[in-house]
Image (cartoon, rainbow over all chains, first blue to last red; front, side, top):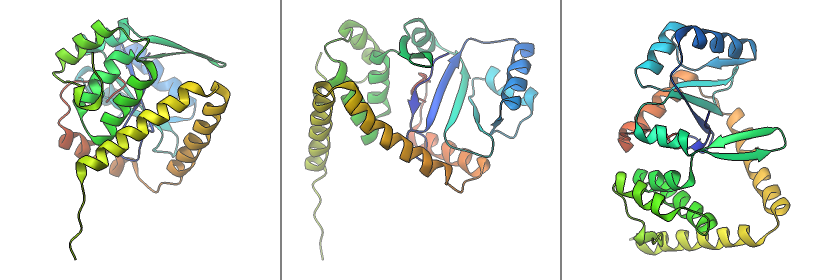
Length: 157
Length: 79
């Protein structure tokens, strides 16, 4: 699983989680566990519809009961970049356990690609914090894949 | 009355702030900067919980925003 913040309406209160495709029975179990654990699905679909959404490359939203934000957008892996995200994930160690997040190089490239003021600022912030630790060839290749440059913002490779 | 707004200067100012904030985070001990971040995030969360928004309206907003951005691929983490 692979959480990281995204910028839906209302600010950075959405965690995207990417998972490999799972069988319907496994999803049904997950669905049941989440509902029992006090979560709900924001999408109106039932469990069959939710599974169909995932299979059809859409994300489904999960939040604590009676609370829209913060929420999780759960998605199945669907393209090469998603597979890179999972393959190259970073481990964040916190007191409660380990979290996996997407590689910073991909986050920077993708933020530049999204291109809003906020996205650019996020990309620059990550770059400034981690520039001495990034794999620059990897970043260069990700930026090439999504056809972006960072020169205008001081992200110079 | 005519208002002037220099978009480029505004952007440069914002980017300079990001650079100086990142530099501050790098030279500040983890417990100190993370405490500040926690205050900010907690207040975001509190505010979000009080947001009178139905899931239907919220999802409509998400769709509209994505259409505007025309996001073609998903890199998790990054919607």
